[in-house]
Image 1 (spheres, rainbow, N blue to C red):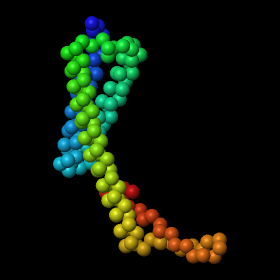
Image 2 (tube, rainbow, N blue to C red):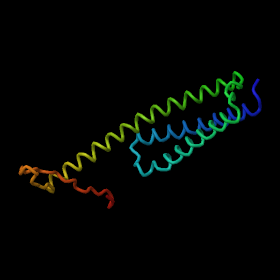
Image 3 (cartoon, rainbow, N blue to C red):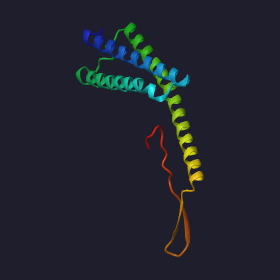
Image 4 (cartoon, one colour):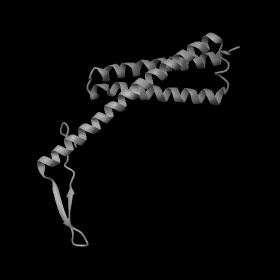
Length: 148
């Protein structure tokens, strides 16, 4: 039979997982619709806070009541499993989309850098120790919104 502490712990963890899933789903939706990255900062911050809270709560429960998850009754265990499944699904979709956006951003920055090098002719030549002439392509500083 579940103790009141086990039930309270499970209920709190379920609430945190549900909130985290909701934030991830909203972030995923905004990323799919092309929301600017700056507008996603608040969601990313909320996601980080929720992950920290979840980790802290699970660690505390593990220290204070190591068998708390085994003490859940069947309906609570089912609710917990559903919340965990939803969190897993939301995080997988969110991670895949974020990974793709990061790859696209890296590709875009690489293309911009290559074009800037081509346009500025930012190259240097140096003699090596053996007397050979070596060409080095120097990195051209790229500025976005006035920041390097």
